[in-house]
Image (cartoon, rainbow, N blue to C red; front, side, top):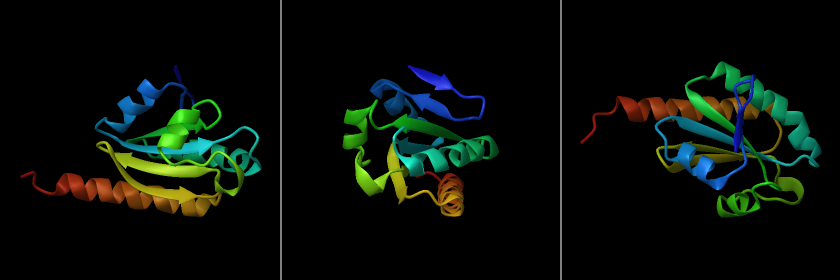
Length: 126
């Protein structure tokens, strides 16, 4: 089950939905978060704002307590200081990871990964 937020982010609650996004043709940014985590609460609104700005990518908000298996499989920590964790994906490959709740660092991470995707798309396919 997934919900498309008016803010441009997508709440994912099922593994099959997550895997479909990760294998899709658009860049994907994931915010692994928890409702009990103060840093997650601080950064999630910023993540959602970025979703409205960078419409060429999917922005997925995933609660690590709802999708425990997926969080563990993809290396998002559920306890302590490592939330929120952000992942960038493209064409089934993880492009990078960022931890923490710094809005400027998050935006820089997203911009740099979108540049990587643009450069990859400009290269001739062999």
